[in-house]
Image (cartoon, rainbow over all chains, first blue to last red; front, side, top):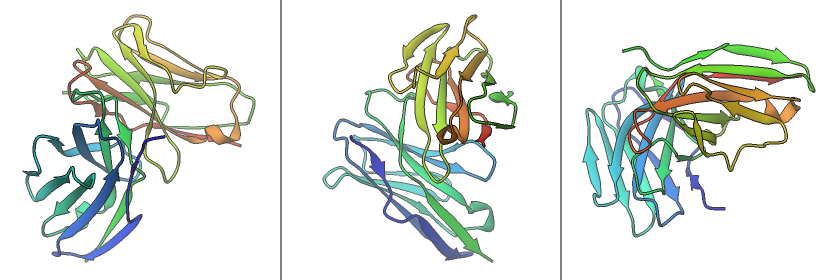
Length: 114
Length: 113
């Protein structure tokens, strides 16, 4: 079936470096995408979202890029900090709303070395 | 604002036993979701409620899983009988409406032995 997947299961970066986490999606009908951060023992926490009519959106230290041509999503974290260590999931909503009925990818574990 | 509350945090049961999880959504949130997150995977939607009605339970294994939200607020998810492959974190999420941002609880970690 259609799914959202991640290219890299683990990513290790040095504190202060920039991090890039990638995601591929296969449902061309999806028009809303979210990145979540999940720390150990906690539920997913919203980081940033983007709609399909945009190709870039910036937040505080985070940027999401959407390439609809190749169905690719990425999350960039600037000046990565130890507190950024977590598993990051991309999720898509193919239901043409911005609700919580989501299809999640596998996740990438980000490890930040001090 | 209080977040989504779930209990218990952890549960260990033997296969073929029954178990129930409880969720209290954010006050005023009409939409409630249950997700299953197997270790190393992303969450997978099990069921979506709007008030006390089921919107989508197409991915709920109905032979053993059931869920209810009788008064349109709290919800319970039950597994009877449990199998080893049901070991996972069960996440509850809620949103004000179906087309607005969902907020997740901390989850209940179930281990079936």
